[in-house]
Image (cartoon, rainbow, N blue to C red; front, side):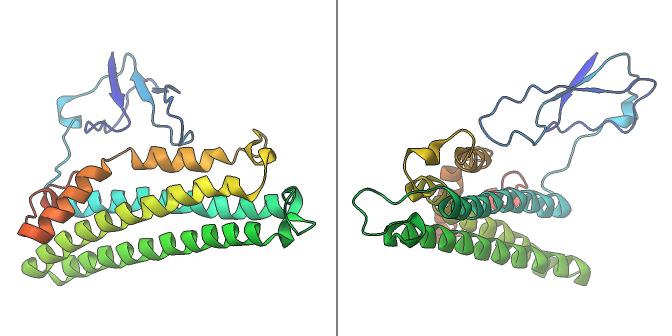
Length: 237
């Protein structure tokens, strides 16, 4: 019996005779649909040449590592968009103005309008940061195509650095937006039926994949000392 995780560095090229069993054993509070559970292989012949480890610090490995970080950040951006869309629908359809409000309805309440405006602006800011990181990755791809090793090395460091910087800032905006969506109404905003809390849980889970404190330290070390060690490893940058 062989058991490998979806996130393992072991890849099996083909399975002989039996289909793998995908275990629904991911119990994180967020990202419930990522299928980040285990895979069970029983009575499956795996030949030595079918198993290999993934190179992390190669040029391609470093680029794909940064691309994975962009995917995580984009997932966070999608959750904020969801908070905006569902928060807007909640205000229009269900929310009530507070007892002390001068407005008769939630959609006319200036405080509700302000909160939703801030959440929507946060979503726009996160999307803008994601686009900037994508542009940095595009420059790495262009450098690959040009075959310029010096330009490529600089582009890989810059894309890793850019993606780290946008995650640090976007994380703060995204978590704030997913929290403030509950300010749009009263206790009905916490309804299990609305499930608005899943946006915060999904964002928090995305951000726990890699330590943001480490990213911030590495960025600071780069600015102060020009250190690029972790930016060149192809692990979490």
